[in-house]
Length: 111
Image (tube, rainbow, N blue to C red; front, side):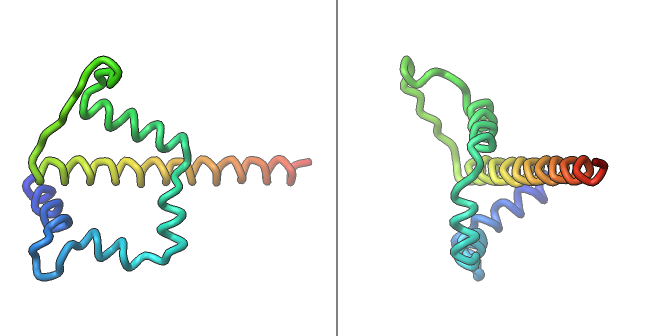
């Protein structure tokens, strides 16, 4: 876990000699890639929202004024967790679409 903590700190560190690695990575992406990543599938968004609500608590905002406070390291971990969940869900979605396409091609080929 300490190794993860070090990597998270390095990933979000603004004061290291390389600057903020995440920000540099985002800036290096092609604009079309950023646009595509900025428009996630609604199903993926719902699953990620449920995941974050599960981590932060699920009190209804209509009845409670909830404030979450944390430190930089814990926020970094939360962001990394959300990013990893997003990548996992996107990969699962792509695999599902690929398998569906293969089944459709196989059905057409069999007939």
